[in-house]
Image (cartoon, rainbow, N blue to C red):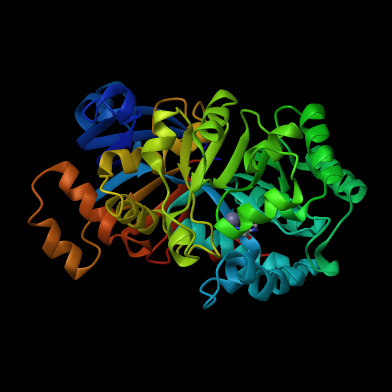
Length: 445
Ligand code: GUN
Ligand code: ZN
């Protein structure tokens, strides 16, 4: 944690509201020559350089970035760390992809040494892509979550994760039971939830892999620990939906299965939600549940086109998710680029300022963490990134022809990726530097 005041000077852009509520022009703050001041892991000042320096101590240490842009860290509202090693697996849609690629890889996480190795690589990838908070699936193995949280704690990250619950329709080597899943989740909640910046999510994989008895234990855990998250998949693939309705014929819809067992509350996050009815959207909004929009995954698995306008009309909270390893990139910038194309296929536009909101403050709102993260307002945790909008020859050439902030932002979100991220700060400390200037021993173990 920083014990002294440090200032960082560059152009600064951050989202302060949803464009749908306040209009595009009132949804962001931009300082052409700006400064943020950080102390004890928090933002203590932000504004135009001249104004901020007038009110800060004369001897404050200032890091100056020429021709760079500071913005708040990206928030990934749905990702699987154990799928890092099987990203880009060829040829299948959801159910076969799970069976052929995902389950065999997740089996390896019984071994905590392997799990730790992947967790480290995963956090390195997040940092180099400018992602500072994520809602993360572990595997069915309790150890997979222990090593994940240990590593996240070491890096002072704000992370939310949970042990997968699966007691049917999966290989024996990956299943638990309603009792063992409940007990292990309880132990993990007691150990990790609200420890430093870590939070727990009860994580049933999806309705087909849990019996009614197991789903009932999820509802019980949420009653016992009302401030933990619930994280699962919903309505991603047409065959998956048919399967759910076959397995739960007495329920009205896919969402109704979760609803019946008490799984909808304000900290529930459902990945995908591509094929939802109006009734389901309304119920999500009424319960303040959120949907994670995962464009690269939806395209990669051929799942379908996400209907952002429909969800917004119903007032459902939406955040962005990479869904690695069905998603094909850790980069939220790349994810926004694919989101734009998904909207185009439906004759809809996704404005770059709306994308900025979804990638940052919108994600924080989906997780009900907007009082802590999501932008650079005073009092928030100092998770931020330094971006180079001219990182590649093509970006440099294209940016010179961009005249407005909005145009530059759009080019950034269309062409940018990890090459654009120069530095990532976690809780006020530099956690990643693209030039490699970081203490390698920092996270070594
Ligand atoms: N549905 C159930 N499990 C998974 C998973 O691991 N990835 C995706 N994309 N969908 C799922
Ligand atoms: Zn997923």
